[in-house]
Length: 249
Length: 312
Image (tube, rainbow over all chains, first blue to last red; front, top):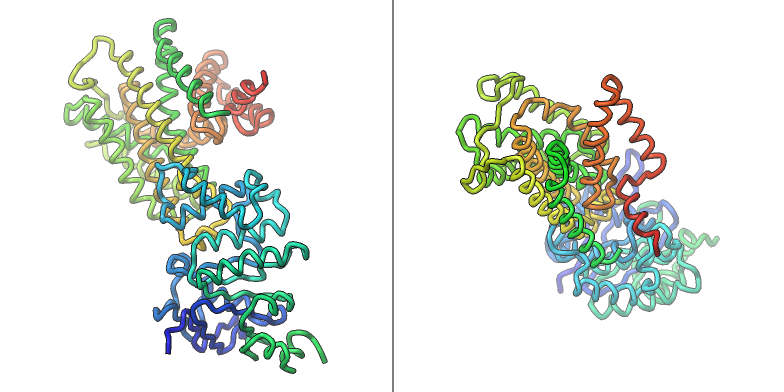
């Protein structure tokens, strides 16, 4: 059996009496693309927070490429190759789009405390422009992030995590807030690139059309428990998933 | 403003400052040198302000730099600037590194208050340990020389020394502001979560900036020690730190030149305020700062850039 890229083993997280994530096990191989579905409060975002070390599990283990990463903080886990984007974009709002991208590039090359070489280096600018073009942000490069529309911020947030060339990418509702028109074009540029680099991808999504189109595998959550895991069409067809996630009687 | 325009302005400013002693009286030249040396300390404050951190204890490094010069001259008979100045920078930076390990864990008002507290500890030590610090009397700085040469006109030599080192400090500051660390400090102000999720560390960025800030401020203090010829615990007092923050706000934080513009303005206003209203000079300074904040909230520096932008 090949080694799982990310292996969540019987992980639970309780907030007082509430079991936000309840004994969840999930194993992902290299290059797998998994969509997570579930209603609000079913534990999807908490799971991402647990995997990236923002929260520590009450019990259970998380293993990345054979290494136990349980208990490590976001910085260490990110440096190992697990990147994430956020439901509410986490950006440097007072800086320009280009600044944000260049900071990510500098951080990725470990130059966070370099106080001598200019951040606006020629190579870095070429790379930044390439990223901005790919994500359709080139025209807004010189603009301040706070002036960017919500959809643009969302795309930039994803772009920052992709710059880190991660082995695992976790995305929390990558297309929420992006206009219906742009949703698919964002995913169409992102997904082939992730596939090409065999990036193991987990994304939380409420839009079943996006799940059907881009995920290879779907995982459904309800009340902190993993209730279904398998090929997308199978999972979406199951009655318990239709009841709990899609709200059908 | 284009890069060439900036370079030309810098060269012009340096040339003007270099020929000033030919035209102006000694006390004005002294005041400018003092303002430039203190401007280096203000630049230290500004580097941390980039990260939203208000150092209310910058006088600590100012005093460490000054006392390094004082000790060497007074206790060891070493007035050689080429020995004392580098040593002042190194000692200030090392102390900034040690204290930075603690300070980098705090933000906002906690950072400000802790830095203030640390500087007041130094103040108390300087006052109480009379045998080695001279207590409130302080230490006199004697025997100033550069590369073994003792000039007949030391204040002129000191002026050019200050001018050269100010240029060097401005250069270091400019490199810092354009570097990944400079931008990461701004990032600290906006979003620390994202920094961690880029695999970088906000604390490391603050620590590194604090070391640079401390070193630069220590150099400023060392230069002031030579200019004034005396060091006393007042240098580390909180009022001294307050002045640096005051000047940082007055000059603005948008440019590496702003602290020096602010510092020159501050020294001259203070000088004339004391002359014309000896009992209410602080009031004059306060009113002036309020006026600047009201008219030009980004500091005096933006006034200069705006004047220059107008002809277009």
